[in-house]
Length: 182
Ligand SMILES: Cc1cc2nc3c(=O)[nH]c(=O)nc-3n(C[C@H](O)[C@H](O)[C@H](O)COP(=O)(O)O)c2cc1C
Image (cartoon, rainbow, N blue to C red; front, top):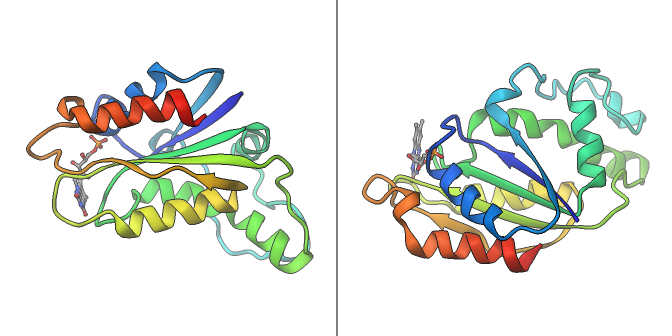
């Protein structure tokens, strides 16, 4: 069982990291963690439209390795703080490269993802600006990576007052997700 995790937080020991570490406690199998803030050398999609006619992305950078990891994975997790009620900018920049999957389906009628996956969402927020848009975006991105089933999001949404590391409900839900969902 292979899990691929996209982490959109710039804070290595922050709130998202606390939820992820609870999630990982019970997780079976192997996992790969991709931190969007460490992958800023990967180009965002530039809408060159190569993928309108070809089942691949024209940009030859490290995203090519990530496409391979997506294909191999059984479960994909999107974990992020809310920034302006969205996933963070570097996360959206990185995952804009999933456009190749959309275009392969839309313009060539092919699916580049053969293995169906489960999807999961972990979100943190300080307290102002709700998670609805980020959940919607995360679900859309997970579906584009082949997620057929997506678990209810696990969220810690009052981190200005209670850091996620001290939010027992969110930690417990994250732990259970790792144990049972995957
Ligand atoms: C630029 C910026 C925008 C933010 N926007 C929101 C928001 O819309 N809603 C919210 O609840 N929290 C917002 N926050 C607070 C973060 O989501 C919160 O501090 C989160 O717990 C940080 O997670 P991390 O420690 O994993 O990075 C924002 C923080 C920053 C820096």
